[in-house]
Image (cartoon, rainbow, N blue to C red; front, top):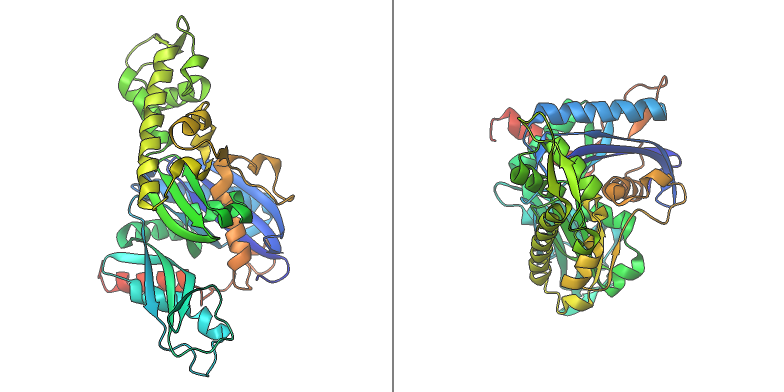
Length: 422
């Protein structure tokens, strides 16, 4: 748990925008948001850095905004990661080194994620999370917490999330080029779940579907534990691009048309209604049937929901129609999407947004900010007792920190870069 009045910074580097939030407190239940800012970004494609310069410029700009508003100097932050390159495995490993003192200690259990991360690492991939799920004590499984128990043989089931090493490195470099140390890397749907899901939902069983600009991130909880994580490389960008490709509109004009007129519910469209759409190379706007735009949107939404269903089947969800589903992310605001999800997947669905913390500003209680707020809550609940920012005019930049898993990972990256191993 963080020290009293520690300051945390979170940066959600998305496909269409970069969001930064700064907060202060001693934990997720004692957290005050000091500042937040969102700026456009066109440096990513489907969650991956495609233009490092553009990405760094957006990060630098958003950090300057929140630093000025909060009155602090930001020099470290928790950063979200997404992209189709992210994958997971649930694995069992023997913990031969646990219980050397005759009893399983808290120090033993604290070492588990680091040990499993090392064991799970393969060439070309970087482990971001190693989350212990259950333990097996002398062959007896489903042990949730073996602290204080005696065992000759202890095994752990772990949910391991990893990403393509080069993709992750580019993201880290883009953030560091903006003058920000990456305090930790967090897979974005895990962050969003901190802000959106309730403990009861995680215990009963729930799938969080975070539909962002370039990707749709999925995390499934059962029995209070993460059982599956996945990414669909489709998001709000594809909805807009369909309009661009179909009518020859610029991305900006197509995005405006989508936000103003698109819906997946054809009953909300009128057969005789037309909308104006600016088209590149034409001096005047064209008129297109509103129903055609809605049909285009509906077909893309149906395709996305089919891909989500495939991912849920991969998660071994036995009866999807009975599954509790929470949709969040900016594209979850698309009119008609919730109803279409009820028709095609499950009627147990709701739109999720940051909740539960009275100190979260009203403007952040929207699906588009679930990841950013979740990153801040993740930071407050898991941070080492050091601040990620210093008050302006006092100590300037804080001293480099070490000891966190991501910090060690970044140090390893720098070492390998200096040896030209990438």
